[in-house]
Length: 412
Length: 159
Ligand SMILES: Cc1ncc(COP(=O)(O)O)c(C=O)c1O
Image (cartoon, rainbow over all chains, first blue to last red):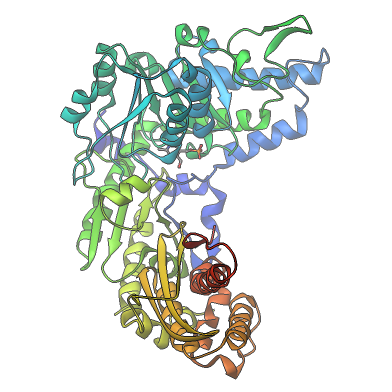
């Protein structure tokens, strides 16, 4: 699609009206919410879908023969179908509901992981979120496998040559983020997946920062695992998804035991339920699934490509505006970036910056963004990060620029 | 609530030109403090005569509030004995956490009173209190070391 045409048709004021929180104020000032990468705000469509479910359709799923339980089951399984379609997965069996990206990755580490042993390697990149580092460190500690880390360069791009050089027949799993939450870098995941497959490794894509901004097709990607969280996609917290290739899932033991994941339980032996239920022990988060489905519906109606084009325009404008301010340094200048700008200001610690921006109604994240290796690489204790969503607008950027001026005033 | 109450001139000054910055070598006790959420790191080194602090320095990297707070603390406690420090530490803690209280902090606090603006910014209280927690760890470390078994370097974390 021609980005310019899409942009012309994008009515951000109408989008903003769908998000009630955007009309609230902070210390009497307009809220400029620039922390969508940490958690996106929810549109009315999501709030109302959850509300409707709670008022009319709630009971436990997969259990009761009565009508209300059937309604809840339909809503929950309907959400699964919505996710399947959203990811273009070939089967519902491949869509597992979890608490979020973190739990999805831990599920893989704990269920698929124990087959590894000394001599086996897991490859990740230097710009992973802690959620895609720590579960692998724990697994390596348990199994004697080795964790390898592909380096990045000063622009915040993956060193693809070094990445390729680290792949070998010892590599059993390659796990990487699609978009860096700390730098905004979009990784060349299609190439990475192909390279990993060529040495026979499985691939896990951390899609937490990607799903809300670009269309994902797990079949076209040809990865083996894809993880994301609903709350970064304008949906509720406490729910997320692990998509996994059916042939890989078949070969994975359950990771938590309990109700729903069994067919029969007896003291002489228990048989496990079929996919995907084998990986969903206990009563699931039904209202969360309903909210996630509504969020996907909202984003698809809005048009992911149109929202993305809008965010890219804001990214370009904000990058230029920040660069024009003396003393501001942007951390992460990859050629292809998502709507995320990490930056530091000379003489102003990010934490002080966060407080001053807040005083001006500007909500940005300050800190290490759960990516401490990235902070170490760029030799900063922390950064401030502004990130955009479908509802971000030019006024948000103007307010950020003004507030940065104020910070420089205070710290003269 | 006004930003000027948080970033008072005294604080901006101590952030720009921290007093007693560096390390005492040798020293009688030391401790590291860190606030992982914002990446503040601080090392205190102390010389003691009995329970009186005869000299103290701080080293590290942090936000303006944590740097100024450490700088002000070193000035305020140098030369004081254990009881006086404990008293001061309690007063500071009260001043930092008295959310919604707009009465003036006690005169005894002296320049440390400049930190009272933090009380209206709950997310920043940890920044201001990090150095005091670290001081406490250094003094306890010293007390332990004088007891039976010396322990390893003291570290505190605000998380
Ligand atoms: C790239 C990336 N991976 C993983 C996560 C973890 O997501 P969650 O906390 O929803 O499990 C995040 C969230 O910050 C992220 O940005």
